[in-house]
Amino acid sequence: MTVLPIREMGDPVLREVARPVTPEELAGAEVQGLIDDMIETMRAADGAGLAAPQVGVPLRIAVIEVREGNPRYPYKPPIPLTVIVNPELTPQGDATFATNEGCLSMPNLRGDLERFENITARYLDREGNEREVTRRGLTAGTFQHEVDHLDGLLFVDRMADMRSLSTWEEFERHGKDDFVRRIEALVERVGS
Image (cartoon, rainbow, N blue to C red; front, side, top):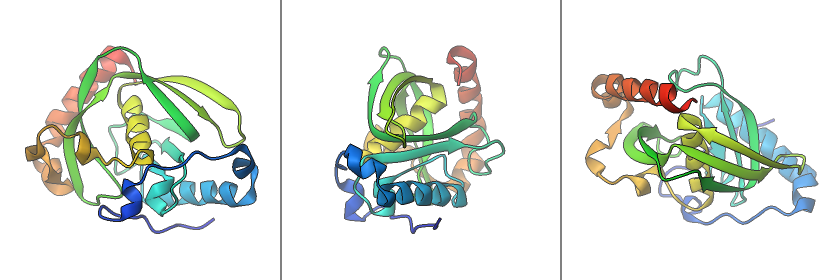
């Protein structure tokens, strides 16, 4: 496995709509190797997820995982390693929550935005099996963030007010405590 370079904001591949993966491609060694490399890259960067466009490949593939003790996201509930191929997300109701997100493709930046509280995700796993899961709260937000990458969107595109855009250090200094309180209330209300 290889740690791949992560493309950063301004790279045109991050603004492309990624194309679906065919069953033949998914079964092939090239795409399976890409998935392995994406997992390795996400873990090396302490990310919560990584989409194929972020490593320069415009395919509808993302990997998601939050390990216990992730230093970048200590407040996120654990998410077991999940590979999503050709995902489709459906909000479950209109309820949203205010979150603050960062992105490996926008190093050292964070900002406030709204995400749906509950979503249903339909996708293929890496073996080509159809999956359907419901995700809530921050985990739902993580799925939405990664699928946005597959649609050529960055979290800043969802920000209603750019005044909350900050560096990671300033978020830690001025916004993290309030954010963690809001997220703890969300987890208590809807689960993780």
